[in-house]
Amino acid sequence: MFTVEIKSEPNEDICLLIKVANHSFNYICDCGEAKNLGVKECQDTQAIFISHTHIDHFVNFDTILRHQIGMGKKVIICGPNGIINQVQNRIKSYCWNLIAEGAISYEIREINGDGKIRTVALNPPLWEQEKETVYDSPLAFEEKDFVVEYEILDHKTDSIAYLFKGKDKTKIQLENGFKGGKWVSELKNLYEQGQENVSLAIDGTEYLSKDLFCMVKTEKGKTVGVIMDHDTSAENHEKILNKFQNCDEAYIECFYKNEDKEFALKNAHSYAAMSGEIMKKCKVKKAIPVHFSRKYGQEEVQELITQFEESLQEK
Figure 1 (cartoon, one colour):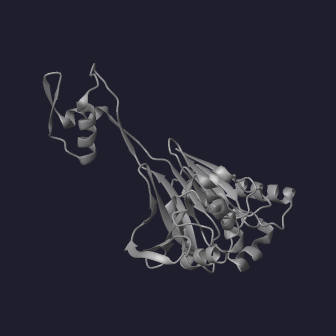
Figure 2 (cartoon, rainbow, N blue to C red):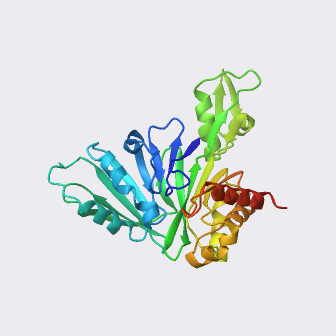
């Protein structure tokens, strides 16, 4: 369901693009420098998910903004405490005297540590905070076919990890000579509602819904995790274990090699072996290391990736 493209080179700041099957829009995770992120990909983006606003995760927001201005659409931006003021200040640092109302609209969703999400709208040309709401929700974003859950990690500042989660799909596999008809969608709805003793008429014969449930198959929604900068603390690891257990695919920061572990501890980052270990504990089916320190050359990055993979495979 989800296709993830790493739009940043190993020596660039991190940026991921997530595409959804049979869906018109893209989704960007973090706005680091990313020369491979195209103009149309920015324009086709419906929501941006920011882990935190250190410069290497936020520096490219202006370029995305530049490509989206004038499209007349609403774009949602999700991020940690403070993201509303930070986005507003970035935008208001430019002169907008030639931009008309309706050129773009941003809905900013600020995820706070108290479990509440604060939202405001920012619109040109004045970009003032409008339509403020505050609500409780475990979801940063929801579409018809998927949701995006979140977890707040510690990086000496809030760092939001996101879980893209496809909704389970109910399908009917016709058996024993049954032919399609209106009853198929009715049976699907009854199954989803747990109604076992409803009578269904099929070709002149009455059946109880529970006797037909054997033809109902549930297709489990796919999951993709995006876990950026975080301290290797027991508290962070417990949160990661709880949120990303059995994830189909996960992208996790591996900022340092194992031999630079002291820098990871000092700067509240993870390192190769530790990121691999937590992904192994989560039983992630496909774990991908990303976001490497720019102090490493190509060979050292490959060493880091090897260390990550060895940690995944350790018994």
